[in-house]
Length: 633
Image 1 (cartoon, one colour):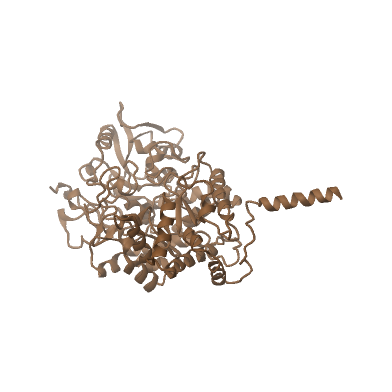
Image 2 (spheres, helix red, strand yellow; image 1 turned 45 degrees about the vertical axis):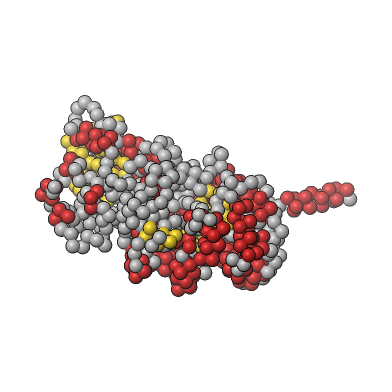
């Protein structure tokens, strides 16, 4: 009898502690429809619990116990927001720890954890880092983009992150913008197609997956940034963080018809494809911040487009509406923002919300609408049934299958700009190949921003294959491959390959007045030209760069964008195992003076006024510029 009692006591203790994959029983779990479950839960909530659901906090800013104390509804990792030891297992434990606090609240409402996985789960060391969106735009392959969404969702859910702040469905009209590479193209229709494909890939249940009751979403995607952040005017940004921003968070000065034609369609397609979260832009329209635009957020997005999900602010985005914090919050919430990415001083936000409701400046109907939308999405994600990370997905992180998918994406993203003297493909039995440029053997430059850190950084920051390693693996055993950053050496190579690159950047920090190659890269190119029978230039960049003066120096030019961790995909095409199939997703300027230049303002340009390469260009698929074009002043 004593043994039976001890066994019973152990079972009680285990039940009290709970398991990582077993949430506490929900008081509304037996109701069938999501709508009924939401209304039942909403009816039990206090004002404090509702405001908590509207609050999103950055993970390093939340104090222990405050998720439970303030009923916080969401936590996020910003760029670089990783655990101290950056492994998938530690990510899962970190997120599960936050989740346990949420489930200890009176109503056991789970948090939803978000991160910017814009080209794979790039904050996670060992994740598969896919080409940035600009490279995917060059592929024109919606099915491939869908598969990348599926793979990214699996690697995120392995770590407990259920919400991806992607895709960017901006339609950049000025490539000097530091977020150009985050979007697929300057063409509205291509952004519509690929943005919807990526969203559906993230959110669709994979084959064999058993959804929870009422679950419609595998992972939550977030089309962003609503609206027109790719159309701001040069020099209108008011931000000055690391250096003065130029375009990011600037002012869009277009009439409504132009906005509806150029920037709204990707959101319409996203909503039709099942979008349940939309993030608002830092930018303004005719001087008024988008976070304050009730017409666009409530009337157009929620009304006209019939968007049923919830709207989230960008990082402290509502704070910019007015110099007075109270006014900013009241204006933004009443405009239609449902969840505030605070991200730091959440107690101030909560207190301000309570004061605004008490003063009658924010109606309870507006609060209930916001919380209803948030809870609906949480139920549709199945969070009440499986709130924790899925350990069975840990094996997908950086898996061979995902890396092969990324390698395919790299191959299809490459755009051949020039190929004279049969420089490409390179014969694998070439006697001597010399490789130059820091980008040839630098994983950080290859991946770009939003990789391990917000801004990204140079160096060996992710496991994978550099372009140089890909070249070394592709050639015959008898081929000599040598490398130096400068391209200086004695002798003559049969083939020289120089990889020129931008330094990693993200958001407005990457805004640039000029898009020329650095003097270091130009010198490496010039050095290698003098020591190579044939010279091939590979460009790593988050946007087209001005290469006009250097263009005649090389026999072949390849736009490789920011390919991610699988640099061997570049070698696959350079050595002819696969053909070049990519097409330019952006117009390629001839001079900085032409900027901003895009497909919408080049129709009547000819001769020396025309861009170096038009939108959609690929060598061999369309006529390139005549050689005499290079003599243009």
